Image (cartoon, rainbow, N blue to C red; front, side):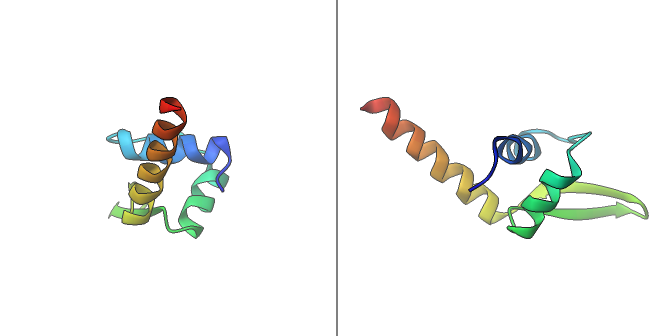
Length: 71
């Protein structure tokens, strides 16, 4: 399970064109769980990208929230 900060970081990466000031600890956790990846644009310049696993995790959360809402 992700912490609220890790979940927020994942959502920022999904929705932002160029998320800045991501918490390195949260980002590292997402990297370890293979929810995000780091794309090197140029030497010293990286971009965070959400992976298929990250998209699947967010979809699963959305389905769960919908179930709770419809009860």
